[in-house]
Length: 140
Image 1 (cartoon, rainbow, N blue to C red):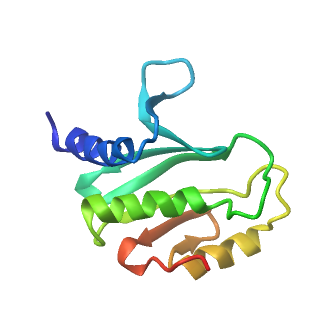
Image 2 (cartoon, helix red, strand yellow):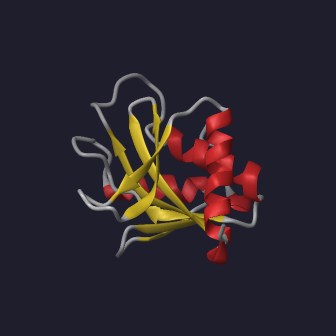
C-alpha cells in the first residue's frame, strides 16, 4: 500500500472513529477518484491527503442547504484542521479554494479577512488559501 493511501486512511479512520460517514468522491460520472467525501451537518467537504507536500487539500466544500442557525459556516474546516493536527501534527498545511457560498451575503473581502483571522494566507487573485496548521487560530 502506498504512503499516500496510508495517510488518507489515517485521516479517514480518525473521522470514522468519531462517527462520521465517509465515501469516495469521484469526478462527475467517472471512475476518477478526487478524494474522500465527508458530511458535516449540512456541508459537504471533500479532501485528499498529499503526504509528499505535507498537506491536506480541500477539493470541494459546499453547503447542501441554506444556512440556518448561528453556527459558523466554516466549522467543518476547523473540524478538518483539528483532525489533521491530531493525525499528522502541526507541520502539515490545509490548502484549497473555498469560495463564498451561493446565496451568501458574505463578500469576498470579508472572506479574505476571515481567512487572515484564522491564520491562513490567501491569494486574492486565485482564491487559493494555505494554512500552516501551527498557525491555526480559534474562531471565537
